[in-house]
Image (tube, rainbow, N blue to C red):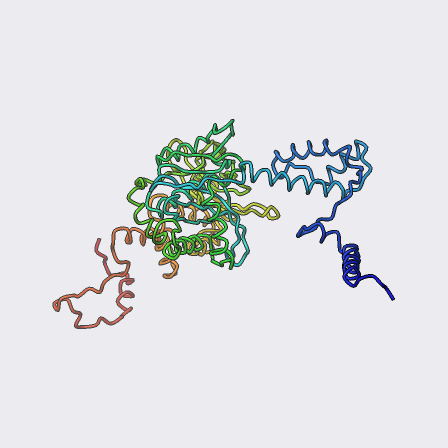
Amino acid sequence: MDSTPRAYRLKAGNAARKVSTDAGTSPYLRAGVVEPAFKVPDRPSKLDPFAEKLSGWLRVEAGRSRKQRRTVKQLHADLTVLGYDGSYGRVAAFVRGWMADHQREGMISGRGTFVPLVFAPGEAFQFDWSEDWAVLGGERTKLQVAHTKLSHSRAYIVRAYLMQTHEMLFDALTQAFRVLGGVPRRGIFDNMKTAVDRIGSGKARQVNARFAAMASHYLFEPEFCNPASGWEKGQVEKNVQDARRRLWQKQPSFPDLAALNAWLEEGCIAQWGQIPHGVLPGSIADVHTEEIASLMAMGRPFDGFVEHTKRVSPTCLIHFERNRYSVPASLANRPVSLRVYPERIVIAAEGQVLCEHKRIIDRSHDLPGRTIYDWRHYLAVIQRKPGALRNGAPFTEMPDGFRHLQGHLLKHPGGDREMVEILALVLQHDEQAVLCAVELALEAGVPTKTHILNLLHRLIDGKDDKIARIDAPQALELRREPKADVERYDALRMKDVRHAS
């Protein structure tokens, strides 16, 4: 029997249990940390000798545009040339880590921090382009969408085009100022090619001549953001994202571009009253109503065309955007001025507008270009060469009345010359009057030049082509109907009858 006192035995037992408990406790629990971290051992990598070189390359690539940067695969290939024999995955992991650190530094040092901006009423507007899709005429079409937004009231207007060219930009701003109720004193743009010809150091810009003319016409001062600094016009940048959700997400369908733009204009104005301003009390429409008084009056719209010098071909055609348009024959083989608008083209020479055509925009390069004729432009040619009327391509687009008359006249000798003389009447008289005379002659069954001239003169003089019934007086009534007696004429043939001389 153990003679050790009970108190000593209990103390020794407690000490033994404490030692055994401490020996079985996890070192993380003894350390007292909440989230233990696994200590990664320092293992050498084949990429270590090339880490500084790769970091330098990544700093250079970060300063380039997205399309000009080298990919990770290209960087791995370049390191292999220098002697690196490691894996592609190690290079990719290094690039991901470097990019994360670089982005974190940028957010802390300046590019990720911003200063809230405030604009006075009528002070500025912001403009930007975006690409969206809609169904036009049953075909899914990619559109270039112009966004214009007032910086104070945040009222905006969206308008769609098929291209981002000068004439489209001028029309977009003209329509925006019309809808917004005036012109702010300053416009904020990015460095788009339709506005800036060359970017200088700092804020120096070589502004396009036509864009400068448009800005001088509306009296606003253009201001351009720093390259790759979209946050300097952050309101319109956000408007691009909001418009995709509010307008383009369901991919609207319309018969043509004009119907789509009318729907966009109505939709934007309706949304002004539904969207709260966010900073000022009331909706965007409420703040915009107060801002209109601070906007400059729009005045006469800017004649926003782009001018080109073209030479007319011997077939009286000019070429533009893979298409051909006819001009009057008097300008064949001569230079003319082509003025391009968003929806039409105008041909001018010697300071006078000669003709215009509806503009054809077809971005499909699989199909050949189209030829747009105006048969009136070739009347001077067929007057010298009437035989060209029979198979002339421009004359297939004449009104139905002229073509039906041509079918009648070309069946007879000299009919081509007579048809040319009838068509030439549109040079001196209203075309609808000439066409009406031709249709009346066809209805009467007398498709001749003489009858058509007679009908045309009656139409021009305001006389009715139908002769009114004559109301004769009673004294002139025929009471006894004469009888046909041919024997009287036989009596004249007798020899003994003397004729009056």
